[in-house]
Image 1 (cartoon, rainbow, N blue to C red):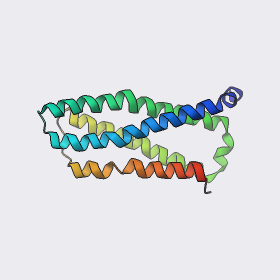
Image 2: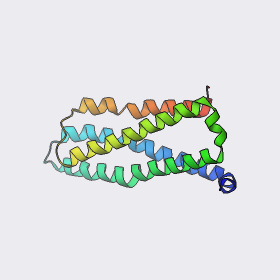
Image 3: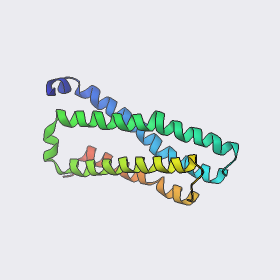
Image 4: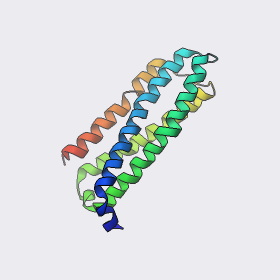
Length: 148
């Protein structure tokens, strides 16, 4: 298995990066849609359109991208198990777990909009729109700089 992974390691890395970019695009865009949805009102045509956009974004882009990010990231770790001897990878994995939890929370918030049960303000979603960015910065700095 490890020989296979090492043979295709750079391909796995490329697909991992593409998947992460796609996942991040969704994590940055979905809360922005929530901001617009708050202002749309429950029975408006815009609300109906946003429900479709939010569902498609989550199910067709974000979920597959998150799964691919995890699969190809794990394959890269299997191909290079010495990574676990470095401290930065543990912090990076913690940040990725937090990103995954955030993804799940965003999915729950989407369901609240789908059923017209949202009780949160546009300001709330504007603040949460920044969290994926902070996690992304931490993850990228750890992966590139490897500070410890």
